[in-house]
Image 1 (cartoon, rainbow, N blue to C red):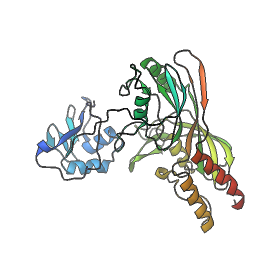
Image 2 (image 1 turned 180 degrees about the horizontal axis):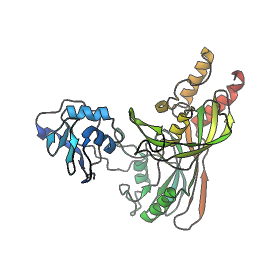
Image 3 (image 1 turned 180 degrees about the vertical axis):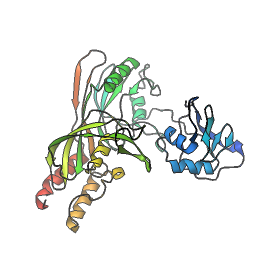
Image 4 (image 1 turned 90 degrees about the vertical axis):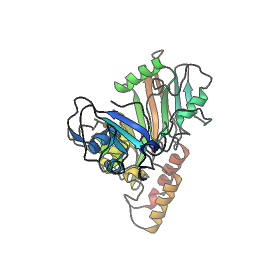
Length: 356
């Protein structure tokens, strides 16, 4: 059970913990379930804090920031049922209350129940560590500030699904609780239609295919996800991505990906898993020259492409669902943003000059 604290470790984690407990502030609290078997606290917390590495948790314990039943413990302490675990830091927790901010939104469709918008790359969807302000939710709060029924801090309305900060494209917003419940069930039952356009490294051998692979956080890097064999990792979630080739270039391929499941980083991880990371995806190795020659002219061309599209080349192209109020089937499509479109045009123009 997790108590209602919503901030985690931050960049000040490694500071020396003050000896005076009055100078520490509680950021997170966990109460161990009654059925929990004995388990090292660093292993226990790494599952409670998916964005935090085990090494980071161990250093926090060594610095005296982790308390169990009021006493500091080391990382080899074994948690027991009903233990109360507190994470303390030497500064107050960040308040992630969503405040309305005048941030431009590209709204494709809006009615009394829903909003469909085309998110620009670089816009964070929801507040988090390092991104307490300037988010899409803050922009929505501003856009709907005169709507007395919309509360951006109510988890039962608002975002129905999410896309990464540097991914552009279509997002669906529910303006009331009934709409979100109805739409959320569609995503759960996989009756929505979502396709993405992605530029990936390499030339795919087949024109279409299906990628199956359970996804969980990489134990060596908690900011990444990786594919696990079925049944190997109890925390891994089943994931299926369908792809088809749209256009082939020298050393890269434009593909359409259709999500059968919607896991965090799913397309990015699945394409990297089959040897075709997304172009300029720094987290999954796509920000280096994966395919091609080592000639200076080619290296400069690729660097220029990175500069044109300084993010992973991924765009949420289409979105289909059933309207929560009137039952109408709706389908929306969005154009590639300028950076992605320019990137494609550069590869299209210069491909004849490169030998396959």
